[in-house]
View: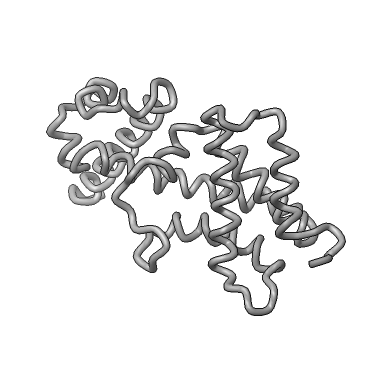
Length: 196
C-alpha cells in the first residue's frame, strides 16, 4: 500500500468517525449538543482536525444527512421487496418511511428538518438523496394517472408522509391514530379496489 493510499484511507476513516459521533451525540442529546468542541473531545482529535474535514457543524450535519438518505433508501427498498401490488408497495413505503422518522429522530431532522447545505430536487443532489426519493417514486409510479406529473405526485406523497412524522413527533397529532392516518393517505393515492 502506498503512503498516499494509506493517508486517504485514514482520512476517510476519520470522516466516518466524525459523522458517526455527531449522529450518536445528536440522537442522545439533540443537535444543540453537537459542537465541534464536543465532537473533538468525543473522538479524541483536535478541533483543527475536524475543520480539516468539515467547514463546521452545518457541513457535518449535511454529511450525516447524506448517510441517512443511504439508510432510508435501503429501508425503503427492503420494505417494498415483498410487497405486492400498487397499494401494497405504497403502504410498505409509507410504513418504512414513517417508522424511520420515528426511530431516528435526530437523523431524520438532519435529513429533512434542519437547514443543511445540500441541493435537493436538482440533478446536483448527492446520489443517496436521489436514491431515497427514487424509492418513493418507484412506489408512486404505478398509481400515476394520465396527465399527472410523477415527480410532483411523488413530492406530494412524500410531503404527506413528512407531515405525519413531523406532527406526530412534535405531539401535535396523537400517536395512537398513526396507522389510521397512514392508511387514509395511502388509500387516497392507491385505493385497494383500483377505483380512482
